Length: 442
Image (tube, rainbow, N blue to C red; front, side, top):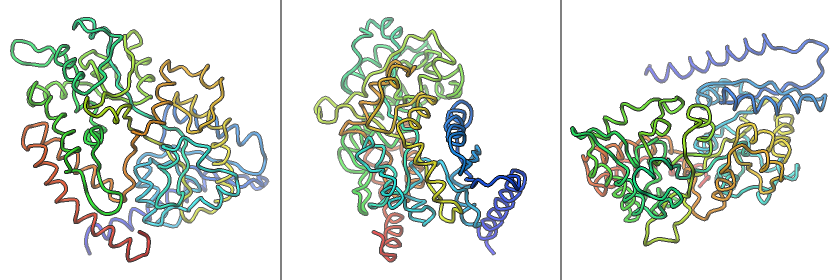
């Protein structure tokens, strides 16, 4: 027997035993007549506490359903294992990048009928957020907290370089020039301050081609990351390695602290400009409250003004796993989260935008992030892009990151790297789409 063939059922059994033990420990007393809904969520810290407030409010205001919230690490793997073991949670908080894979594995309940009965429809949501839960026309997830990205930049470093901090770069060409002005090295070529590095934070390496109008796939069955627009975007990213040196960039990156720490390169003023999400405010106020910073839309190619206001969309999703014992009750809570009151309570607690089109004046007035309107507006941009809804995304993004690394150490040209990547991924996508086609699901 292969190791993997033995390991998966063993892990499934282990997870199942853990869940059974947990349920035994938290079993309601005999007189408790409420239906208990198990809800797994990936969050910790203040993000978890924000959802706990929503859960507590729901539990307090009715006496039929009790939602039992549990913070779970590695939630995607554990949820799949629990489903396979026949003991899934009733509700799972997943990332948008996993929804297509889960749907294709028949691991999630379609929510269309439940949503229709509850009066929930796409027109109530910011489209870019809602659509991340839809796979081939079926609804498998509803959004909890969303996010968009923007260019965060250090006004103090702009001033030191003789740049106007009130005039951020509008185009990718202007960004490169500003980065050159700000970047400083010592006499040995060591980077002391980088104006901008496409490797920071390294979470959206896939997006540089998209920023220039490229596509990761055609939405049907073809990998398209090696098309001209996409290659141009990766060539722009590689230009930073050419100018500052791959070794110098790697050395500086290796010396930066963890993202969630006071040693974060943006907070220590070693990185002047960085693409980051709406959540960055939370960390700056915690670790570098005196930092002089602001945000602006991500620059676009000068010859492509149609690509202005590019942003990466990310959505925390809520889904009902296949095999849920209390799916209707789970959806009752999900419906509460999707209400304006529940959504704003959660998103204000996590200091993020709302997923809903309709936002109360109080939400804006009480929101601590001074740039929240920009992040909200960017979600409506025609150039708002989430991760592609393709079931092999986890494999694809790993390959993109490897190809991107080869660019940044000058091992390959952008065209070579993207051609090689497409050649590796196309057979995998072919196998995947063939399997879906045989099941009649394409």
